[in-house]
Image 1: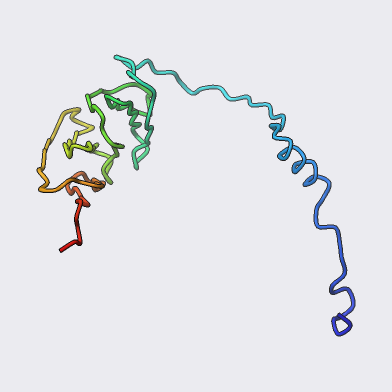
Image 2: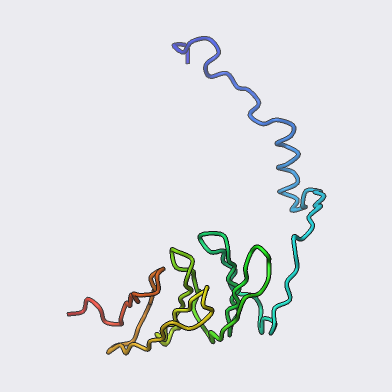
Length: 158
């Protein structure tokens, strides 16, 4: 310690009074008093309404559309004006997503059923039901909806 320049190794308080107040609040698990003055931009009534709790909410990559997914369906809304465009059944679908160009929505199920929907045309483009020789342990649909990756039980066993 004697070889260090003057001031090195000296102890100094490491926390400010503001930090100590914040730390005490966190430890006591009491929320800080914040006044939120947030007004919704718009409300949209979905027809028919979502059947279960909302499971997924996604903005399209171009920011023009919103995807609202529940346990049994997917609703597509426009952002400006904020309104429902169309809805389609997607029973037990895994998380749906927009294509990179925001013109299509694709999803698949654990049973490997896949669908691709056109946003501008508001219609089903393709539906497929591939068959796997072994049990599928994990699956992932590519963002463009054209490739389904599967990890099958027993992969790598020879």
